[in-house]
Length: 96
Image (cartoon, rainbow, N blue to C red; front, top):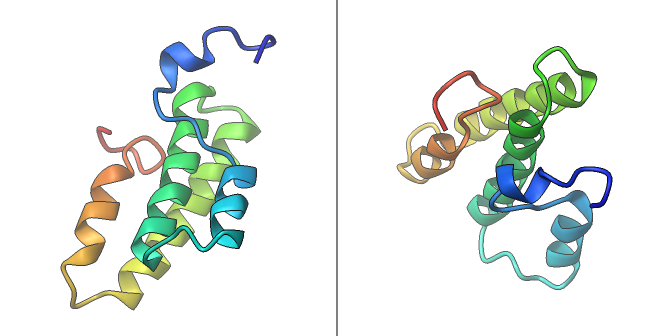
């Protein structure tokens, strides 16, 4: 990432759609929780690194909100969603 030399200083756990897709294709996700956690991490990384006014922040923030709302509804009466929700700091305006 020569264009963004500070990216790895700010983003400690980088992940992108290609990595998520590779993990999906290789059946590396043990559960839906694991996959949702990677998506949340990806969205949060985009929000953490980019300015709140930028489209690169706003789109992932919207996706994160939609994903977590849907996920919470699916698991309304289970404890498993709490861990994933706790990971989602930046996009939802909570401390990360």
